[in-house]
Image 1 (spheres, rainbow, N blue to C red):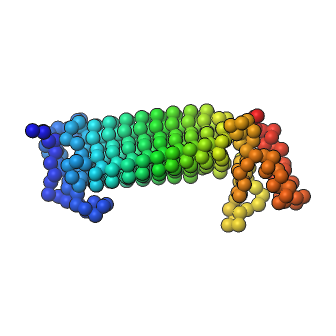
Image 2 (cartoon, rainbow, N blue to C red):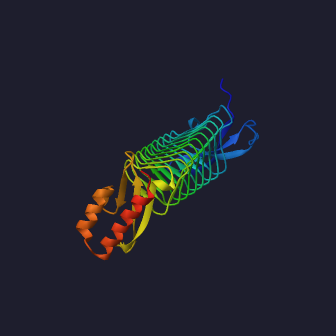
Image 3 (cartoon, helix red, strand yellow):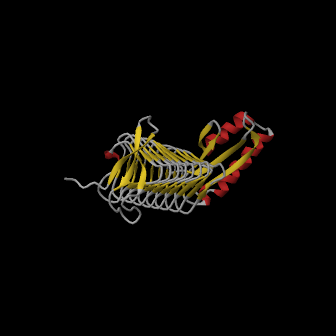
Length: 289
């Protein structure tokens, strides 16, 4: 007969999915943090929390649907693990974090604050995801990497090794951030790589095929014109995988030569045209090729 380490109590709560959750009570000592008789958080059914290992649901945390917590994992505070998500090994979920969909958190990873993991996202190794950060699709954060602030990781983007992505940054499908790189308040589009010891920041945008590993690989400048919404307009010049210079500008993504032709065509000899041509020459002198 399987030995149970906890039981469901009569104390109930309405879970996020609308179903009934039962507070759990330890029947034996569990690891270093839980003693027999201690009350835990809420689960919908016993399959949500393994009777093996020292995994535990603490405080008012909830595990619902067919989500599973096992190994030595911990779900604490007001965190929610739902749908088909799994939290295991020595992973810890805390704060108001939500782990949903088919997300997986494992190894020694931590997810906390108001962080959100959806779909097939993965956080593992020694990785940390916290604050208001989110992962959607099959984005991954692993090794010793961190995702925090209001940063978002979308559809296949990855942050790994010792990299950090924070602020209002977004890494889109196929984007990679690794090494000791830091991305702050910037955007990386599909197949853009940010790596090495670089800090990629200040509203910079790395488009497809960007390869940025130092400050000599990109140049971001604020324009003297505004968007139609009155917001600042930025232009990012960056080194590409072929060793050339790519440009991201509102409504334009392409080579520096194509950008120069567009500026001549759209702005001519106006003050804006002169400004952008000056930035093109500066970018050519600043970016290694």
